[in-house]
Image (cartoon, rainbow, N blue to C red):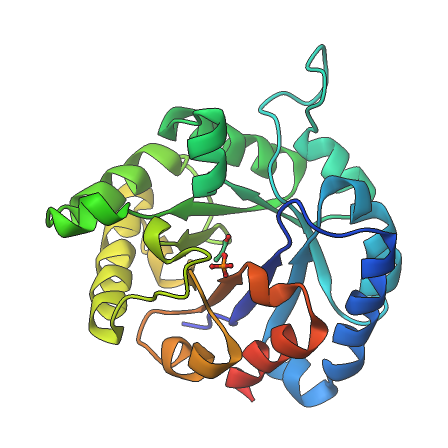
Length: 250
Ligand code: PEP
């Protein structure tokens, strides 16, 4: 089993050309020792992917998109295909983020189609799952996440696919689950991924934790069994905090 930790930054609808200076600063702090231990990627808004690639690639930082359409091209005004992200230099794409599920009504079936589109284009999908506060309080967190894994992962996905467990109530709130709850969910998710993909693939699938990861809690969260890295929102916007989170693997 060799799961290389992955720390991915989701810039959401933030960032301008000036923000590329942050990517350069991330590269400056992402030294040889850290590169050997952890993979670092940033997922800026689509407007910045191509330009960020120029800065990031020479620094060893990967690029991802935040969403893709299920089709490769066509009459879908405002949308971006996985093939376009690939063409722009991305190697990853986030699919099924809870903000996409909530703001755009994305169902598990749509998320699965997007993950399949990413694989078709040669991108690695980062498939997001996670329960709401009401679902956790009702004791349904495992059932909800299990159903999302079943519905959102293409059954024939390779073991390179990445899954991000992001409790909706932890995103942007400063709240995080207890380490015991994270450990329980990640162990459960790996079992469920195995049921879905079969063939022992789940051993290699990286399962990220996301939701209010900060430099102050990264060490604790990243040391939990079956946590193979982080999907970071707010704290990925500045090089200092983002690299400090990756530093949990130093
Ligand atoms: C996210 O949106 O994927 C996320 C984890 O956000 P934050 O780190 O800001 O909670």
